[in-house]
Length: 226
Image (cartoon, rainbow, N blue to C red; front, side, top):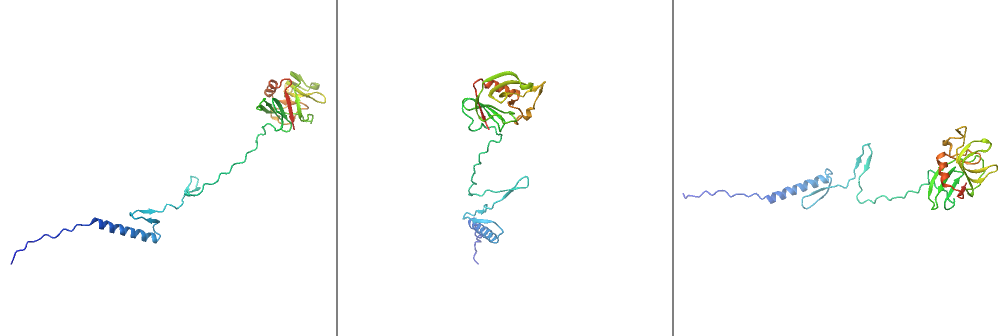
């Protein structure tokens, strides 16, 4: 009997490339199967083995008060901006239209308000007053013709300060002055300013009467509007 040399069995080298390819193929097949059954929200399976999960679903994020806000809509057009209408002057302190030009005093009978206007049209001051309870002053342009630091009303009806006269009434001069006092008591309260209270003149709080006194020298225009 001849002698044979016992040969060692050949080594089998695992082919990792094929194993990886087979595993990847199995993964892709499994993902596609689950996606077809609706069990996995698959958007696409790319050649490199990357699985892209859909992100186009919109979400609502709950607010702290239980409300919800709709998520971004991607390429949706932003809402158009609508310009807000200009609001009218809510306080009624705007200088009335058609109230003259240049340096002047403006008195609005309906608003019971006065404006002190500089030469360039800038309003230096505006405040509420109390005009006459009777219609004794027509709209128009007047001018200051007399001033008195102190004055006493007709028939001892009260003491006034900073009297600036610009018109003539049926029985007495018409002008701006402080709220009259009688025996030290004001004939009206400051909270009543803005409503007609006098019997001819235009009453002002004392601080505003000082402003008028400093502003309206003799010859200053006074424009009265309805």
